[in-house]
Image (tube, rainbow, N blue to C red; front, side, top):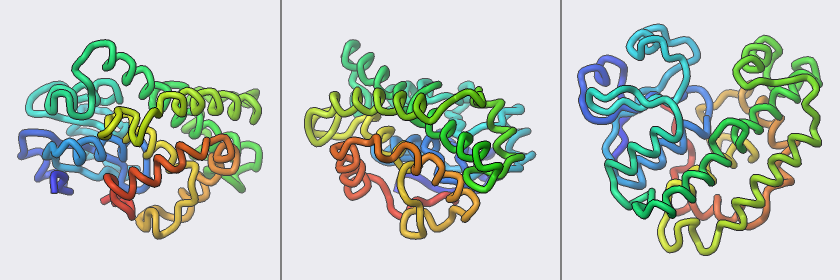
Amino acid sequence: MTLEYVDLATARARRGTRIVTASAVASPWSEAVKGMFAVAQLPAAVVPRGAVSPEITAWLGGTDNVPVVLHDDEPQRTNWAAIVGLVARLAPDVLVPAEPVARARLMGHVDLVAGEGGLGWTSRLAMLHASFASQGERGFPLPVAKYLAKRYGFSRDLTETVLRERVRAQLAALRAELRGPYFGGERPSALDLYAATFLTPLTVIDDAVCPQMGEPLRRAFAGARELLAAEVPDELWAHRAMMFERHLPLPIRLA
């Protein structure tokens, strides 16, 4: 087992890799990072972070998002590209191809999934759309939705049609890249892990999927599923099922 769940005191005393992840929600950003370190067999200490974690925030110098990856005494990494780059360095040519053009191609497709405006970002906007359209009866409770709206650039003018069309185009590009059992050919790559974990918000999240995730957050995620799940090609659903059968744990562990 390459991932060890630890408390803050243990993580502070460690060197090597420490990953601060979401402890209440199956955040695809967190789950993709945990998946990469596990599949690449890179040892890491996982520090689950709650919604209010002042001690962890202080340790991270004020950083309030997840995931955050710390490796030895290097600067903390807080975005998907920097984290994938670290994995590429620690496990050369395992999840990220060393050949420059192939690496650039992979990174571009991961951006469609995890980058600003990508699949995960748009799924979050769909949750917010459900919140505001229903006055908090669906999606997030309104106070949470108003907070997240500022972080994700949500606009009340954002329509369901725009969200669906954006995701449809992103998923079509991913489907076109899937040329075998994996995006990388005969073995999984970072893109396989991101594609699989970022479809989780578009599935039914019950106890079999993530028992540690509470009902309010399951309801919030349902806003994305109701709007966007029909846009996912069958081949990507099959790919996700294969990834969880072979490489990713079910149920999803948060803490």
